[in-house]
Image 1: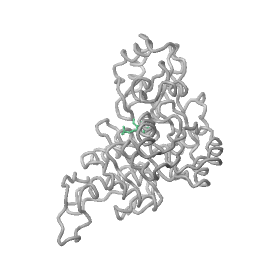
Image 2: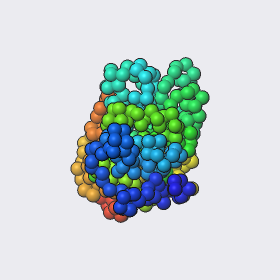
Image 3: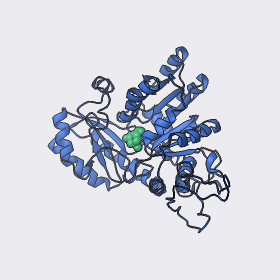
Image 4: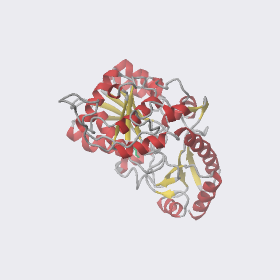
Length: 401
Ligand SMILES: Cc1ncc(COP(=O)(O)O)c(C=O)c1O
């Protein structure tokens, strides 16, 4: 049974899962063995060595493939469309290995700082990649670029980290198809509960499973999902050849987290909207960036492509610009207590951070300025605590800003 006909809530729990065959264990055991016995050379039960085959990792890979509607066979782990890695960046690094040395690619201009760092400071040197950064909130920019230049891959993040720009996924997918570029969407912020890139025509989805998929800030991991058999075959080869796989303990935790994704995302979305609306009325806040507010420049696209139960839903990430500069940001961040001042996002607990100094320090100052990652910009990851408590905490912090 593939479970692909179930609602997403049920797929979080059952998608690609089946009881462990030896004992009937309902939850997949953590298979720690690095190697597996063979009856005769080359005669075995489908498991040789744990980098290549691990049943706990396969269980998470089938779950995430199912959630992103990969559609490739779940019956054989080797042809399943999901791949799990040691981190989100390990997933990105492996995806980039689909490109040949020297390949040109297009990347959304505002992406997670680590994605930008990997491309510009590592792969330009080691693989000769030629990234062009474009603001893809206007898809005609991509069309105009691809009319003149080749690109092996187009890398999109939406909503982006940290300025929450929203990209029209269906439009970008159609342009990539016309020009023969592999389209990849980093779906970390929206999760498959809200946004379904493969169903909108994308070739691949990437996740930092460290964030909403894991959901509890207790595991670092990454995932890739594809619905193309040719890409799945290449990714399975690259995953094993490069070897930055997700370990069995992490796969167990990530799968355990994914089972509650649906209920968590409902709360993240409800509280995110409530807190964004409250912040928009606060005298010390110059601007609130949240795709759910009509003031967001791509609100209409967000409402169309980010949905839960057929209704627009915008997630738990909010970015604000405070009135003032670094001193005001510091005072605010030092005086919130329920929101932990920490990097990362997407956990049950609320987190808050200063991208210019923390997550996006690797983006050159000039690019940060252009993108609007300024000293008064603060990013919030709204957790699932009671929203009234979170608002009280923010009010206290802002009173000191
Ligand atoms: C949108 C996005 N993509 C990718 C990553 C990288 O994931 P990881 O930290 O799991 O390597 C992050 C990390 O913050 C992220 O926010």
